[in-house]
Length: 115
Image (cartoon, rainbow, N blue to C red; front, side, top):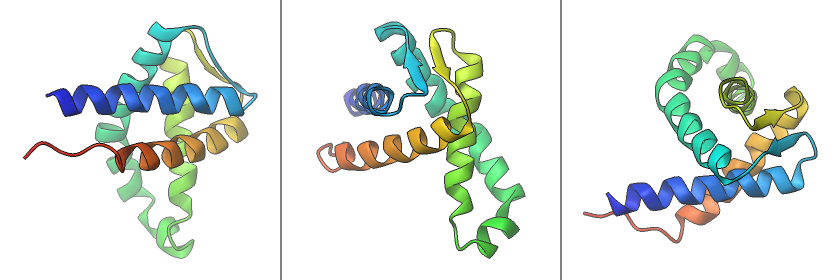
């Protein structure tokens, strides 16, 4: 359970760092950042696999690069669901999702799963 909360907090940090580096992403405070990270995790767990399967031919054709577009779309969708979290356009969502993925990967190297 502690690992889950730690990952949620690290994903919140990744989201906040992306908002610092990408001009089109704005977060109104810590509560919207926490909520946006939670909703992004839920969206990535529930909706993203469905969209990935539906767009599998395109992903195969682009050698998996279309997954970056799906990640950007998921971030953009979350900005429409969470008040206080804004993504100004798809370009900001695309590069924001790329940075969030990078930061999340870096942070996950330092977190061990409980066995």
